[in-house]
Image (cartoon, rainbow, N blue to C red; front, side, top):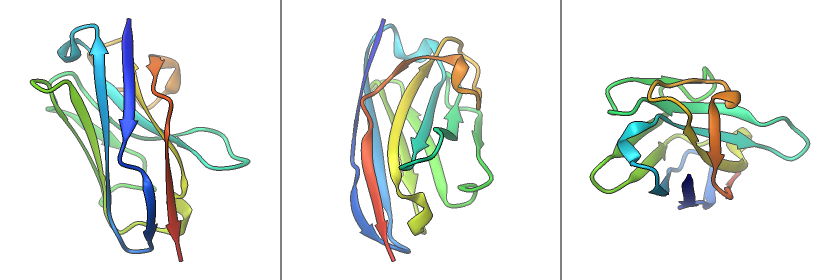
Length: 124
């Protein structure tokens, strides 16, 4: 079992930055990949970024590539999402998720555990 708690959301102006964190507990952190997803009002949940168990491989959605950076610290059981050059269309609830595998995936069906989400609002 894995418990995930996100933090770091908030209100920021367009062009600004935010850093989201995901604190994990339960199953050994370094045994699974992690991912970030988001859901805007009235829209489906969408993939944002993912990282493998060791942090050596990452993958991003086209909409955030070059602006967001996913990372993890296995010694601290923490995952992070650094978001730069934020746009109003990045406004959403952001969720971190723990995969059922050590290998990264952009599909939400690969993730068996989810945090409660943190709100990110980008004003224009």
